[in-house]
Image 1 (cartoon, rainbow, N blue to C red):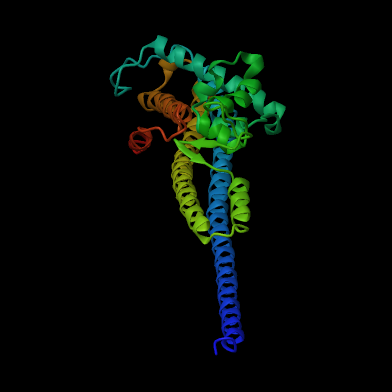
Image 2: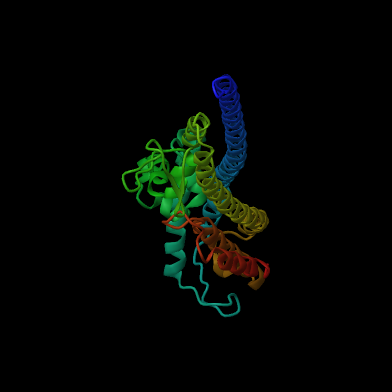
Length: 336
C-alpha cells in the first residue's frame, strides 16, 4: 500500500531541503568570506599605492621648498654681493677682444645689472619678512618657477604676495600645496585632483566604496570593483613616477645652482680684492684683472639664467628643455 511510503517521502524531501538550505548557507558564507577578503586585499593595495604617492608628493614639495630657499639665499647673498662690488667699477668696457670671447655692449651690461638688482631687492624683502611669510605654497613656487616669473607681476612692495599667489596659477603647485584647484568645475574639495592629466580619486572615496561593497551579497560586484581599484592604483603609480621625475630634476637644478654659487663666491672675492687694490677705474686694470671682472659678469649671467629657469611649465609638467638648459650651463661653467 502506498500510504506507508508518504512519511518516508516527506522525510526524504525534508532532508533534501535541509541539505539544499545548508549548501546555500555555506555558499553564502563562502561568498561573503571571499568578498570580505577581496575587499580587504583591495583596500591594502590601494592604501599602499596611496601612501607611496603621498610620500612622493611630500618629498617633491619639500624639494621645491628647499630649492626656493636656495634661490632666495643666492639672490640675497652672492648676487647681492656681486651687484654691490660690480657697481663700484667705473668705465667698464667689455668690447675689447682681448678681454672677452663675445661682444657685450655697455648698455647690455647696465640693463643686466638693473634687472638683477630688482630681483635682489625683492628677494631681500622676502628674506627680511621671514620665509614663514610665504604662505599658500609660495616657497614651493619660488623653487618650481623661474625667478623672473615669480617676481614679474610684483611691485617692490608686493613681492611676498606675488610669491604666495603664484602657486594658484599652476596645477601641480596647487596640487602639491594642497590648495584649492578649479579644474573643469572640480577642485581638491570636490574630490578630484589633477596632475599632468591624471585624475586621482581621493583615498576616502576609494575606502568608502570598498567598505560598502564588502556588505554586498554578490561576489560578482566585488570583482567589478576590483577592476576600478586597479585602475586607480595604476593612476597613483603613474602620478608617483611623475612626482619622482620632477623631484629628481629639481635636485639636479639645485646642485647646479649650489656649484655655481661656490664658484661665484671665489670670483667675487677676487673682484673685491682688485677694487681694494687698484681702485674703481676699469681702464687702469691689467688684462688679467679685466678678465677677472668679466668672469664675474659671465658667472652672474649664468646664475641669472639658472635662477630664471622654470622647472614646471604652465601645464604643471616638467619643462621639456630642462635637461638641455642644465647641460648648456654646465658646459659654460667648465670654462672657469
